[in-house]
Every structure is written in C-alpha cells, then in structure tokens.
Image (cartoon, rainbow, N blue to C red):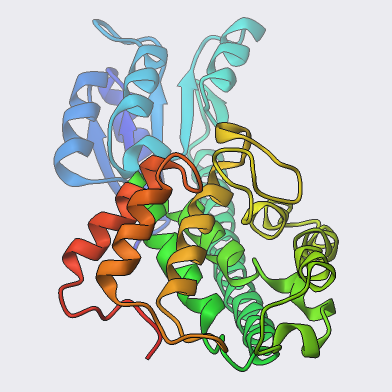
Length: 336
C-alpha cells in the first residue's frame, strides 16, 4: 500500500507542486487548504503516514493547528509533522520543534528534494514503529518467561509443605482479584500477582521438619518460621528490576493493629499490596487442609474475616474478600 501524505497549504501553487512531486514517487497525496480542514479530515478518515503543514495560514496557523492535532483523540495525534515555511528564523524552528514537529522544509522548495526528504522521514518513522513493536514483543516474551520461572519457583516452595499444594498461586489469584476490584491498573495487578506468587519464597530456607511438623510448633520453632518473611525479602531484593517484590514477602504477616511481624507496622504503615496479600493469604490458609485440621467451612471462614476487620486485616480489603465470598455460592475458592 502506498504511503499517504497530507499536504496543508493555503497556496494552491504550493499544493500542486508538492502533490505532483510526491505522487510521482508513488505516494498517495491528500491536499487541504486550512488547519481546520486538516483537523476535520483526520477525525473522519484516520491518520496518514506524514503531514506537510504550512505555518502561515489565515484563521489558524500551523502552530495552532499542530497543538489542536496533538490534543485530538486518535492516531493522528502521533503522526509525524513537517512544517512548510518561508520563515527561516530560529524562533520559528524552536517553537515548531518544541511542539513536536519532526522537521522544517523551507519554501520555495525543490520538488525532488521535497519528495526525497519526505521519503526518508516516512521510512525512518516506519523503522521506529517496527522497532517499538519488536521491543514490545520481546518484552512480553521476557515477562512470560519470567512468570514461568516464578511460577515454577512458587510451586517448588509449596512442595516443601505437604499441606500447601498450590497455595502460592491461589494467593496470587485472590490478591490480583482484590486489587482489580479495588481499582488497580492492569500493570499493578500483574505486579501484585507476582508478589503473591513469591510471598512465601523465604520458606525455602526453613527446615522441612518444622514446616511439616504435624503437632503444634514450639516457641523456638515458631520463631524460626517467622524468619521466612525477612529471608524472603532478602532473596527478592536481588531482583533489581522488580524492587516491589520485596513488599509481599516481608510484610504479608503484618497485622492492621500492629501485632504482626517482622516490623510490627500499624494500619497504613503496612504497604498496600502487603495488606491485600495478607487477606488473600489468610483466606487460603483457612480454606486449605493443614496437618492439624481440615479446610474450614465457608461460614467459619467468613466469621474469621469479619472478626479480623480492623485488627488483623485492613477492613477495606477484608470487605472486598467478603464480597468475593458472597459471590462464591458453590465455595469454589478453596483448595481442591
């Protein structure tokens, strides 16, 4: 498909010269006589590959037109703009470049030179678009690979405990849903999902005999279990590209009333993501089998969440979890 250029100039001779030069090089050309005509045209017909825009025009000059074009919704707001101008002053060029113009072509122009410069700018823009698309593709691939590695690590951590199969992935899913209902943007939802997957990563350093002990833990053993929060944060602090991963690991056992660990944070001193994961983690713990008990009935879990509002849990996130339970009439949100 031929590249499409819109030429905007109130001088008919300039329009004809530019149109002829570009058409001769195989480009599709649309000629318009005013800035308003350009705004109306792209709103109805979409974005061209490039716009040649005269600066000095009646009613609305090129600078005003560019400002309004950039503010207009749609793809044309990102279209490369090249100014056509007889004004060779430095101030005009500085103003145009600051507004986002890619280049200036001074009038009177040589038709062949005009066509060559337009061709180079369009080719460069296509190259940048292709490069951006490739970077985005590789980023998605890397994110997917990282998620696979994290999921595998989470599964290996869960495997240390005979009674927590799938715990990390369920916590991650519950946390993401709570965050979604609270209004998180998609990228933050991805981040809290990752935090949920890795919230127990510190258990990799806890002896299996303590993790799988069927009887009540001694005070010394419980003190060792509690170190998994600090240990997990230390492990995840090495992932420099995702510093927020530390948040879920270190603070998911803090309590809203300040009686949690490891730092005894109170209320909103606890990072928001950790407050969300705390609710998701506690819910999954109650709805999963343990060495010393079976999964709790849904009504018991509900009562525990209600009783923990404002003490163990942030009441806002506890209420969201309770709303999710109200919708879960089949009690599907649990270990199966």
